[in-house]
Length: 290
Image (cartoon, rainbow, N blue to C red):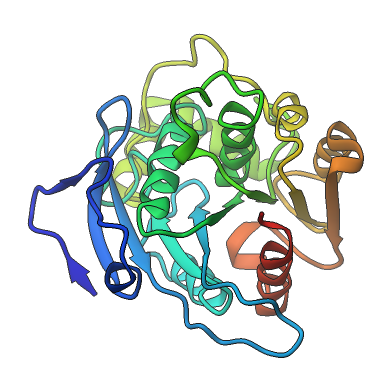
């Protein structure tokens, strides 16, 4: 994998639109609209086709990992490898995670990180972008789909940051949920000084100490703004973080504009997403994006 020089920051149009660059793996730092550097990786697709799968060379998946993940985590790399069978892949570390700058806002400003990654993905010449998010990343792709969608307040002048299909896996429907033991532990990690120390030194995740102000649009409030962009909601019926009322709320908000896959026996996010499920998501994106 080719890595940019230390300290390099990729800005808009930093990658020429050419077949040469589309076929070359690249790692660099992007800069978000609010000035945070985001560690990002582009990998061309494996270009493996079968008779039942449409050509996907113009499709790129932009993967939004869950809280405490980063671009180098094995579970993130496994997801990237699975989607590379269906198109090119961009992975990145959210702010405060891994080698990226800034501090995590646990789903708020992260929408700017995703917008920077989508913009970069399009600079490789891909005509179609599918955003796929897991857990916290799942909430981010929903908010991004609404904010940068047809009616979104951030769409004007930033069409390169919009997506052509949205897949949200294991996402919450509403903020401040504390109904399960894992979510109570997560709130301790985020809200308590000692919890943030555990996040920084134990989980390689730097968490912002400030509370949200204002509180961002919730995932369920965001969903109606995604249409007409295709939306897929995926959730396990054994998710230990968010019970099945969360995906059902999201699906109800989407109406006939979205699909819900409630997966029997599946737990939470990337670790619980079987290779077969990732393949189904990949095929869905090929058929729906654009």
